[in-house]
Length: 156
Image 1 (cartoon, helix red, strand yellow):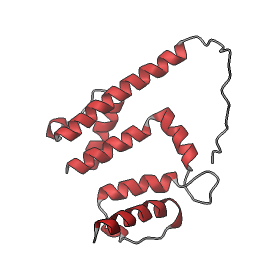
Image 2 (spheres, rainbow, N blue to C red):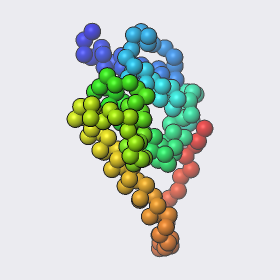
Image 3 (tube, one colour):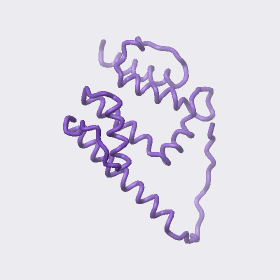
């Protein structure tokens, strides 16, 4: 298969997973990482004003901002792509790193440098994100002399 055909097939597969249900590739022949990406694309679905299924992009983005799920998913996919370790152990390591929990299934030393760097980034983002949120809630609110325009995104 030519490179352009692979790119076009991947674009079609990503759009189809969110709304149409058509396929130009054999879904059963995809890798586990591709299936994992499809899980999330199918769960998220399409735009709020569209007819696509899923929880909708706006709703998902609101959840990601609060929960940091996007970093966990990204970290899991990056590490799964660079190693053959079991998925459940990788997910455990990623969530432990993002939550800065300090627990490990013992696979960290078996990870390639890419995986170890990803865990380091997740620990940093998880810690800074938590501290930033706590500091912003603890600080007093000062009323500004100006107002930003407001928009209410469509959810659901």
